[in-house]
Image (cartoon, rainbow, N blue to C red; front, side):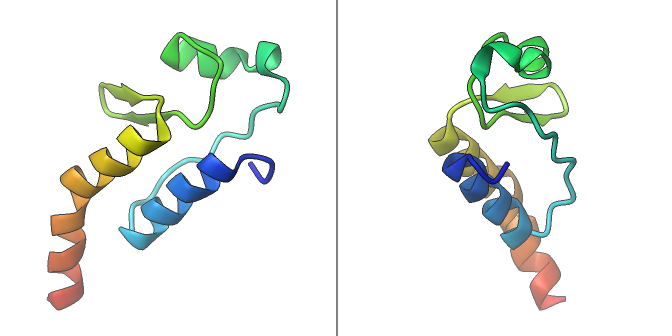
Length: 79
């Protein structure tokens, strides 16, 4: 979503870590973000769903991605 700077941060982190992901475009107007609500119980973006884990705060998403995936990204770059 080009209108969402926090979403850009999350996309950049996913790309940096080499994680394949599905990006879902949602409306800028919060009440129309039904898909976001269905996944996370709220209307704010970004939202990250990784298996059974759902995160809705940008800082928490970035920290989670670092914890879960940065070691595997480091290994794949050195192999």
